[in-house]
Image (cartoon, rainbow, N blue to C red; front, side, top):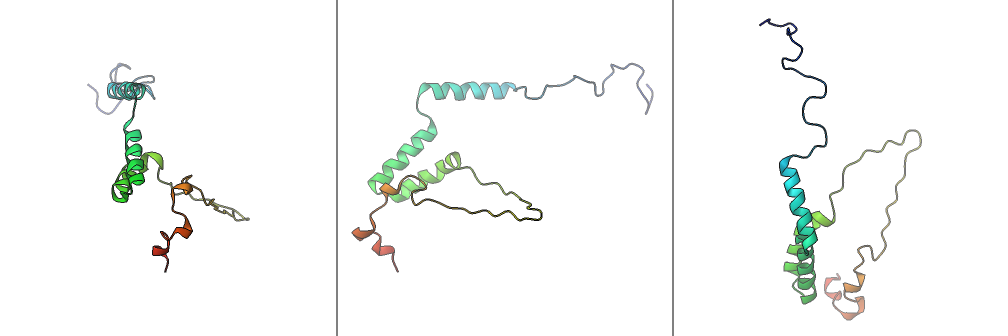
Length: 124
């Protein structure tokens, strides 16, 4: 067998066009886990739904420590982490203003009213 040169036959190994797994082809494991996830979603309650319901039940009962534990577990599925980005403005810099409404999370109605004394304990 020659060393360091082209092989005598073009089909003796090496990289060939069209060879190998095609991009996007699912593996056996990926197919199986996808099927399991679709079956679970079709059958009823998902684990995230259970965590959120338990969190809300503990919150409504006033058990904030347990509600916070469920919230901590469910948070990565509801609120993905922010990615760091770099923005170049060129000659005119880009200005970004962030505003948030008072009821940003849609649960303002759950918070105690300011005049009932519950929030006075946190005031300086």
